[in-house]
Length: 114
Image (cartoon, rainbow, N blue to C red; front, side, top):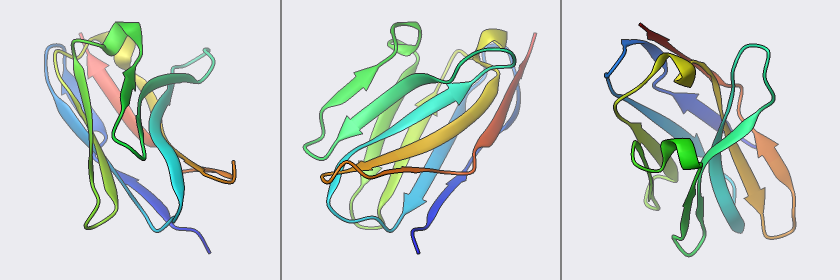
């Protein structure tokens, strides 16, 4: 059974920082990404990192987020800085394999107070 465990969400003040982590046991990855779902809005991509280390960011997060990976313990981190109230939402880790299988984590909540 696939395991995909997220951690690091919480409550932070505007301008603060958070580091989200996603630990998995999935092999043959194509890419891993962080997505968020704000209240009343559709889920959107925040950042992704490919098997080869290529990163991609949402325009709104380009200067405020950094996605990285630790291949030793199979963990992907999302460091977010200068957080704004509009960054509030549930953040999900998504893993896509080379066979196009898709796995989602259970989500971790991020709340940014003004």
